[in-house]
Image (cartoon, rainbow, N blue to C red):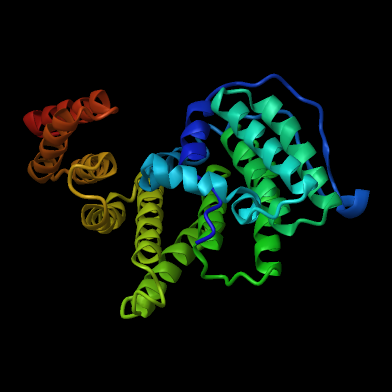
Length: 336
């Protein structure tokens, strides 16, 4: 599976989220052979709109679905820029692109988005000059994720669309997990911009496409489709359900959010296990939707279990889970 956003980078982007950056001058992306690429400017940083939509938190919170062992991350890093490094046949330009991408990722991890942006522009220019489509696509995606985290939503939208265009132009199918992942990010951007019709269409497209894909592929033999590939699709569906549920809860539709959370929780328990941090968070989130409907006893069952498991594994968000437990217990006690 062509994974656009590696788990290690995802966590780095999460650490960078919320950091205000100094204004930077606009840049124009290079085009093929020194020409001009699509008109995608890099505006001064903006924070996501407040009050107009659910913001970026639904998708950021869902990135935890794809946490994996370090060995898997290292393997994915070796496949950067379209797998050129792993093939051992990278020419001088490809080797330089790979080094630039590594430097950009390091800058993101260090919360230096402006430096990362400049490095990525250099990588993209070199990728165009060497006509390396996979490197172009990979770099566009990194730039899009960086803009996304910095709240530069219009620019992120253009960059994600450019990434998708390159992937589809290279023969990737619309149902491929990489396309669904980008579609999910676009839906979250539309939600943050209060473009509700586009957001709903995006979330529903992602979920329905993955559900149909899973149903169609469930009987395929392992020599045709590996267990790992099937698991990735299930996890991506869980992430989509989680993100959509958060959007619905923000939109004051708790009963619909509850149904999405129930499906996401089932997937997480089956694929990751009951004690996985993401599963525990989903239990607490499901409790929140029940609490919002006045179903306090049911909410207490889920949030109490989530809190107990969080203590056992020393969950990094234990304080938030305990806070949710306290709030739900208070609501039940007051009958509010």
